[in-house]
Image (cartoon, rainbow over all chains, first blue to last red; front, side, top):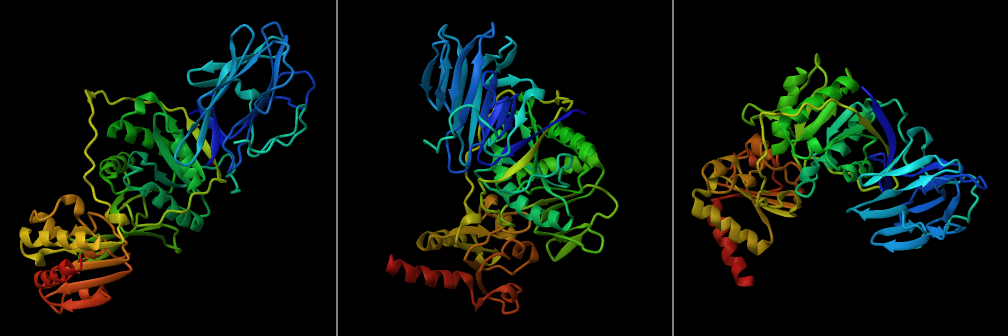
Length: 161
Length: 336
């Protein structure tokens, strides 16, 4: 029998591949120009998930950088759109690259991610699957605490919620 | 932050996650707390089984209350509870992980599911336990439950079969505080689900919640056969209104139709832990006293000075309960 295993936080988790996970990283956030996506661990007392990434189109052209839920370099003229419980990053062509929506329970939070993202070689790395996102299991590095490795973007901000 | 279990370990003390009753009683959280004690003595961890659809929030809640691991089977086919399907899945999981102990709530849900599961696993089950211990000599589970009509407390062991299974009343154990910093392990086994095709769901309607909050009440009045009649028993409700109390009943009073079955206190009913319990016209059968052992103070009223209820009472009044309730009402009515 096949058994998949993950961590689960009592406070906040992301739903990825139909499973909960307290945080994860794909690619290398320390790289200067490659694809990455970071859904950072949310500490007790914080209520906002923190997402960062460098996203490309099907041709491998950089569309946008996201630094802790804010747009950075943005050659694709993407738009940040606040929605109930989170935000979306929409490409200039109107496609939702990333949608982040957090649901609050009695004692915790669950964030659902959706979207479609490619890397620098034009390979699909992340796509919507129902109410969450599907990624390659082998690419997914789970986090059991805040991401502390070298990071090409701005420093992790204090909780803004 | 609590340590996460090693990746290949699934704690061998299991608790069934009865999240459907979360807002009615918190028996799963209470069982996790007790399971932590038992698991500590067995050098293992606590695993909660979670079956259903979109149940992730409950996995988080159970980890916050002490679970080391949560085994999740999250499928649309499990949205509605079906005893055969659930017990079939649980038996597959037992086969896979070989737990030592499985605990569940002695709720209507647990009373249906656990005997079926025990039969499938060809093992024993102690129902309606009032305490659980580990025998240090053989590390087996000692399941303490009233027996022989409640006349004695039996210590039941299951030396030759595994897992050892028990159901426990809501309110028997105290839950651990919510720890938002806890991180646990979550396992998603890919099981073969064989739906129970003998049952077809046509429609469902939630049952009206008519249960009282006896488990949480700080003041409980319990009436027994000594109240004599339904009319006399009704006076306990007036007394409870004046004192801000909840009313419970012993088995003979329930059998006489003087109170609704959901007010039954004891081995087969509710376990209460009030600051003050007033026991009126009750003899003190073990079946009943098993449900009031957690009361901080007990006042007993009975005509028979040899009634066994006086052995556990902090204050005893020898007299007719009906007369004394009448006097109490007379006095209280003057004050309110």
